Image 1: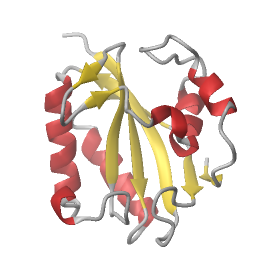
Image 2: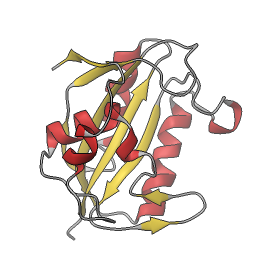
Image 3: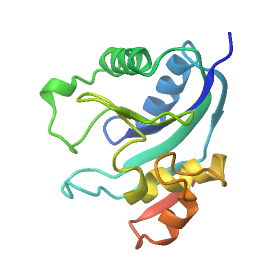
Image 4: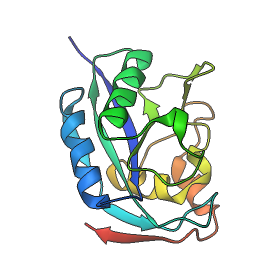
Length: 163
């Protein structure tokens, strides 16, 4: 059974941030094969400024699940790690955040799931590690190189934490 390439964004700004990212990657091994990880970046918060800095990274892998099932399993990992999306401030502090950025060339527009991620092209903390793994990725909707989106953004305070 062949799968599709998926790219997930991971972020943490509560507790032992680096350990949280590592635990999430270990959990994702049960869902994805051929996992590759970007460097880890420290990022100042974008939307809610009064919170700790984030550590962010991107994980690439091969997935045989359908997008909704992948989302269900990601939400289960977040919950196991102590994050309840129903009880947190949107864009606020969190132990772990796992978002589906890209799922093959698919375009999904559902109430609870949008692929590509709707804010993918406005976030350096996503584009920098994503393009580190795959410099030639294109937006499946516009077919434009994602590197163009990155070049169009002003500095958002994203710095290498650990390569």
